[in-house]
Image 1 (spheres, rainbow, N blue to C red):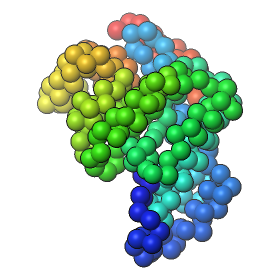
Image 2 (tube, rainbow, N blue to C red):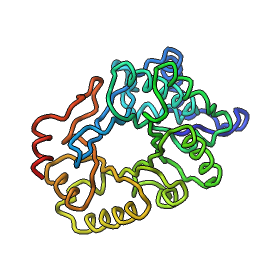
Image 3 (tube, rainbow, N blue to C red):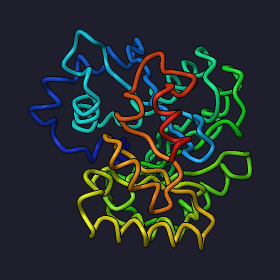
Image 4 (cartoon, one colour):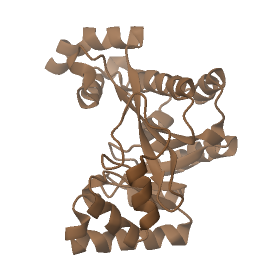
Length: 273
């Protein structure tokens, strides 16, 4: 989810992808034909839903329903900043409309915070319209391209913290420089990339990686959330390694109307463990 910070005059010629999808994407953005889905994030020790990550889908009757296709089309059309703006507004209003408990993890790319056209008060204004407070929202930074403007990004996140927001760093271990981002930004949460979660019970190297991440988290006061949990064995191993929060298909798939309480089977499993 990245805006293109070049001026229109400097943009390259439209790619074939952009030519194909420009009209469909423009219609989606103009009519805000996006809908939000939410995936629960669970506190294992507290046996409760901590909050939800807000995710976006395009129109169900369009090839842009897939978020991968949607954001690739926006990137090709130089419309990532515009797409992110609509995504944030739709996600915030739907979260409030559903009356979901806990915290909303709201995806924002670092490049959006750094873009010259970014409007810092806009997100806060949408939240006020929806009846949400900054304390209910975690800004989840999703890094898809290298970041070099660390001082500016550090000040941007500090600005949000002063308003009451918390900060999360997404896909730890998958991005370009997110270990440095962790050190620079000192996020409240880091989300362990699903690569390290998948089959972790069978992979001693992944287990050692997670031990190291857990040790850094303890030293920095950061909470680790494991993404992509798809089996009870993965969940059990992560808990043995000290990870106390997670999300994934084993817990619940993203849904337009997600559960507001843990499923009884999962609650029993966590209580027994």
